Length: 216
Image 1: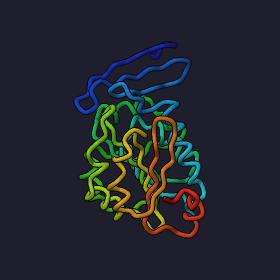
Image 2: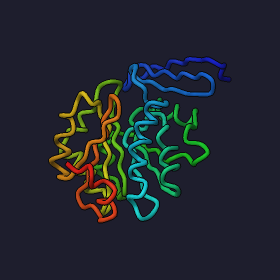
Image 3: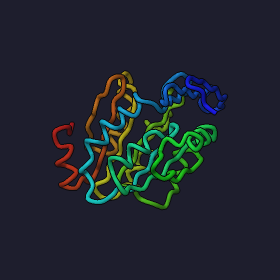
Image 4: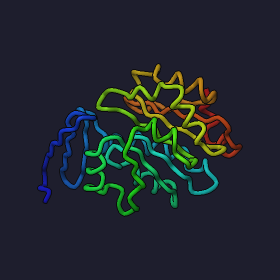
């Protein structure tokens, strides 16, 4: 049972040390000292997703690469009612934490695939309207975010009008250059110490209307 204030540490070969902190009913999950789920991360994704609230003509199929204890799943269901969410996470400890905390409630648990994001996207049979890329091990970004083959696989798995969002530290803008080359059309949405990159290749007129003022 959780106390009013509590801190739990879990060793992880992928993320280093994972900590779960709970205080006054709020939960923060950190990996390598960096918040993975909590009010700061939730706000970063919420502000970006709200800008896409009208980008899809139907409840989107969403792929989340990097689970981060699942806090963003609730944001997705809140902003896109009726959406379906598939997630990919390489750390079994983070998956177990997600299922323990159930931060996605009252919405259903997402489909969770344990594995390397690059390998999963290369062989996944489905296509998606929205792909979120949040691949950090602590403060270190996965090399995949700058890997052309990985990014082209994501592009291949987007439905017409589909959009990829990539979360990076604002101090590392060079990590988005390959994605800019692969997708061609993009925007940057800064938020505090992070930047959400917005990428699409075959935008529908409706999606273009949503983000046209941000196109670079």
